[in-house]
Length: 360
Image (tube, rainbow, N blue to C red; front, side, top):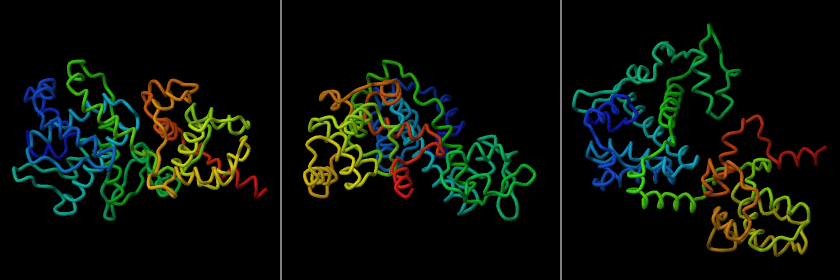
């Protein structure tokens, strides 16, 4: 096990090193608390900070924490955790190889081990698809489309690129981003996977702690998109009830208002939505929404988790995504999953439609 493997545990050579050492993962999770703690840290930081934390000073601990972290992600078994973990591992790798390439075009580990751009391209079978030029690189169009598919921004669209002889020009910085995507795809591949009961039982407490982190965290704090057709069934049910003018209990109104606040709706927009509801009072509704948002209270309230929705009878219309994809964890996980799975061109913000109608 070499420092190179600990810094880039997704490399095939890192996997080979673990196999060559005949590591028994079941024994590791049962007896090596330091490795498990570092693995939990990797996942916790991925969820809350978008990184994997500081590497452990011991090569063995750092390297073995990677497969244990993948086990933990598989046991948590929610799309948002899997996605955030893969993104965090890939981003950490990008930061390391960018710093390395910027310094010396290759990174020395003090033990004759190094990772060069050529080696990284070879790792992902990209050597024949990426061509260095005097001004940057050119990538075969098929490879470019595959790696750029998840990138946001018009600058990544093929129509905005100069396509010559089946190749797309990219800068060095853009190639680094695309390599990060290749890493993310590899890390994400196969997650989640089935974990033997003997290993799962050893990690019950750690998995429960990660579930708690997910349930308490506002995972959609960066989302500002309102697409009712993609709402979880429980929120669609409550929204339909509001729009039909049906009476809602306080806990139901709270759940819906908290959800709408979390996905970016303003107080004015939510107040307008509730106007058709019996017993509507603008002042009281505005106060409640501002209170949930944290504007008139010391606490910013989050959307109730699925377990809470069930206990109040607000869990309605449970579907396969609830049970199989988000493991009945949280309405926001459902919504984020639907947004992730829907093509950008098909996502139309409900508020934009309203503006177009009013202008017409």
